Amino acid sequence: MPTNDPTNDTYNPPGNLSDDFEKFTFGELEMDELFWQSNIPGDNIPWRKTSLTQGTNLKAKSVHNFNPSTVVWQKI
Image 1 (cartoon, helix red, strand yellow):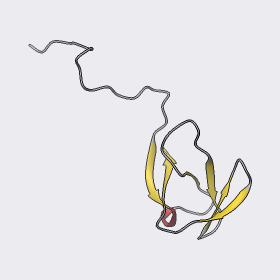
Image 2 (image 1 turned 90 degrees about the vertical axis):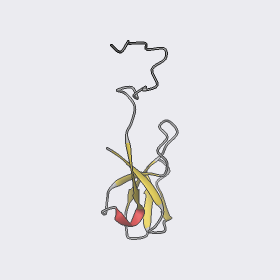
Image 3 (image 1 turned 180 degrees about the horizontal axis):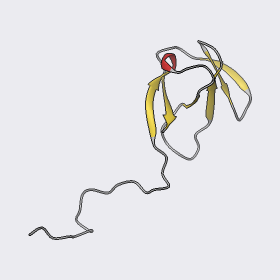
């Protein structure tokens, strides 16, 4: 019979307060969708897609150009 040994178990699921992100390219996003440039929580700034090639930084309120093949992340 298997034993329950938490100190030696290799499976360690993330906590229930962690953010889950899904990987997309900028071109796959719909207009006005939120996205992040990294999947690391904490110092991560939200963006909003405003056109086919531009996104707005929601903290700095500045517009930047993006390549449609740029990898971005969305919270799920």
